[in-house]
Length: 612
Image (cartoon, rainbow, N blue to C red; front, side, top):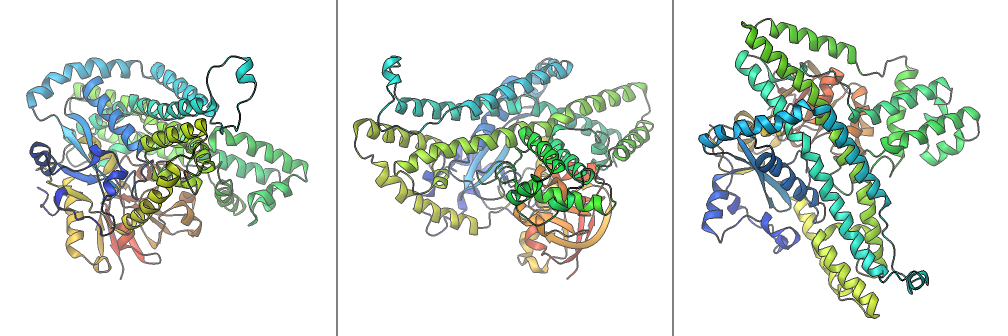
């Protein structure tokens, strides 16, 4: 049992100067003290900080995606596929930080009742996976196309005469309200599709894990993951495009121009002066859509700009590959080696099974896991990266109109309003525009936003506890384990760290053995994509979490350590695909480890030793 070392959610004190912060977020995200039944439920549940998705406090608008998956994940578990042991995932917020708790099916008889329903419904998807997945891709491409085509037009001083001649009967003010609603609706719809396959992907994988851990009691979890590795997925495509461009630059002998420290505009200007340079630029431009719609972060925050928003980001990553090629090194992912290792491990464990029935079950579960695994990564590109990258900029078009009408002082101020507050402010704005008066929002919102900015700064200075509430006797919810890395052992390790208090006294960290191997080297702490340029060859990356846009740095590092994540988090998957050690879900690696420290990373056991 996890020792009770975590505070009650109702005992967290308000940070001085942030009183009233609750109005920045949905009311149902607040922990309750005025309802006995709800308060008791909250106290008895185990809530952990979802730092995997949100390594910093949430902006009032950005919480839209948390609201979206709150609904989507839960509905597919509870109302559509009827996952036997798990209902939804409940959400709360403390000082801007999101805390979640899986809600189990408490009644064992109810679990049994749900099994045949799940088998029928999920079974249909597994049997028709490729056909349904093709339909899913078409839906996602359609919704992204609709998003791109959506027009957010500034309000005219006087409507064009065509409004009269065509007898439209509506105004630009009405269309602004309508298209804002459409923008938000497309975002929520996108996230409905996000979870159409995702829970089933994890469920297939978790079922395979469960079979293997029972059949082979001593098997490390990473061995199970290796048996479904070595599969090409769309999420690797942006990185592969950079590799192709690097090879083309060397082939066309324009690598010296690209390899300089110039910014993108200077590089484009220099390349435009030669035929080979123009050929390379044509390939560069072709790669931008859709592959440069990849976020520089997790994609969950508005400030996670895409490569297309700042072309210097992919340019700098491209230079890493060019340097490797110039040095005679390979930049290709060791796919064949990973696949051979997958087949070797699969044969080894399959041979240990005693009966034909067990071997048949093993083959079926492994086959299904390999079938569904690509979606577990691919959905990220379509949703968190491609869709979100376009969406954030559409919201900036809304913000530009609000700024023009003095509702905001800066376009980036819009993120301090919730989606419902923006709708209310737009009604104020368009009715004032319609009547030729001054909207009250010009007096209200700039002042309110300045206060919220101060609150948010204090939130960022605060260190949230990794969890609150009452830990269960045993943490068994499968998604919590494989994605977030929340287990009895990890919670005990986090609690032990809190007991030490002073991070400078910690000499050992423990996390999930995300990818096998042992290395020793110098740590480089990178908290954002802006810092990864500082990485030197052979260093060990230490980060809160990683995102797909960080992929080129895996050519430089020899291991990766993260604060959050389980064996199916991005860092663990990518390290396995590159054949390098990883320890994930350490809790506080970026706090304990400092750049320049010598550390030993054991990806076989999940242990990190720190030299002090």
